Amino acid sequence: MRTHFIAIGGAAMHNLALALHEKGYNVTGSDDAIFEPSKSRLQAKGLLPAEMGWFPEKITKDIDAIILGMHAKADNPELLKAQELGLTIYSYPEFLYEQSKNKTRVVIGGSHGKTTITSMILHVMHYHNVEVDYMVGAQLEGFDTMVRLTEDADFIVLEGDEYLSSPTDRRPKFHLYQPNIALISGIAWDHINVFPTYENYVEQFEIFISKITNGGILVYNENDPEVKRIAETAANPIRKIPYHTPEYSVENGTTLLETPEGPMPIEVFGAHNLNNLAGAKWICQNMGIDEADFYEAIATFKGASKRLEKIAESSKNVAYKDFAHSPSKVAATTKAVKEQYPDRTLIACLELHTYSSLNAEFLRQYEGALDNADVAVVFYSPDAVKIKQLEEVTYEQIAKAFNREDLIIYTNPVEFKDYLFNLKPDSNGMALLLMSSGNYGGLNFDEVKKLV
Image 1 (cartoon, rainbow, N blue to C red):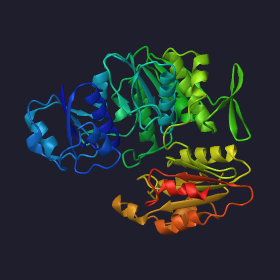
Image 2: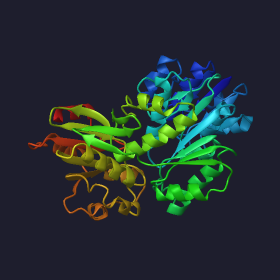
Image 3: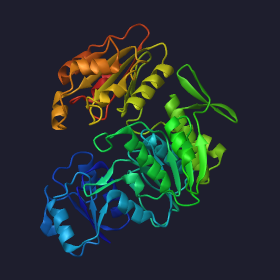
Image 4: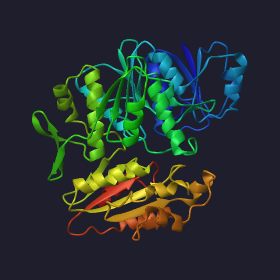
């Protein structure tokens, strides 16, 4: 089968290209810019375009499938040529569905936690040598790619993103997968550029539930009132399995999970991660892994990349980075680190980087999000606000939104870096938490290791 990727360089797109190449497909692609690690990974398999740009003359009738990435625009020259020739054009999620129509589709949805839960499930399957296909939004230890597609696997585990499918398909990605088994981890308003009201955002999850196949299974987080409400009021013929945060304790910096066999030390920590673990357990049990085997495997799970990832540690100090940017995730992550290191000074740094977080209206959602930090720092780039064509966010708006009088705010990356590298940990030691989906205007996280 011959496939052509329009915007092959994206994190998700290049992994799908690699998976199809591994499956034996004839894969080509184009893009106007490709960065690392996509560039090297495509190059290693001979899939890197010879030159950057869009080349409609390369779109020919013998292409079986065009796969359109979000980075491409609706007026992309290659897309227009494909439409003119009447070629079959798929969005990323549409193509994944096509590849998995004959498999049991397991879809993990939620405003937060979906990458971690998907990673936990794949870790357990990998530990017990159970072959499954998958698509996950982070690079996982022990896995070469973020996408795997085969003819043989009975299950496919899909991270179900609620963002739009493609420039020409405005449906949320997770509406297209039609899961046999689904999970919803939590609902907290996000992507306000696409879903302008909270009600409109919640509606997407109600539609997701309605797409579960008849007789299918919904696993849902009953600790989240909104998730509990829409799950319990759903009228389609499905089986519903609630889960909640399990009992646990923290002793000398180690989290102990309560299991039928007694307390078990685990690598991840924080109530939100224990909640994710409970959801992953139910999914794994419905995929044929019994409870004891799940606990044996999950004990060695260290976390997904960029999700509470420990980047440095000494006898008294520790540093983590986390992808957290939504208000609920920022609050949960900050609380988790303070709970894990109660006697250390927690310095929590948050970069406002996404469209939602830089929106003046949305900012008020952050009230209290950094309250568990001993020192709270917010960084944002006025340039990022301009690039996203948003109204300027002021220092005063941010200070008022977080409602914390001692909040430290930086807008200059050099000044923020100077602040970091001049930190003087006190006698109790320091826990440094860097939360961002960006890099604080060019911060080298490897250099942060020198701080601890």
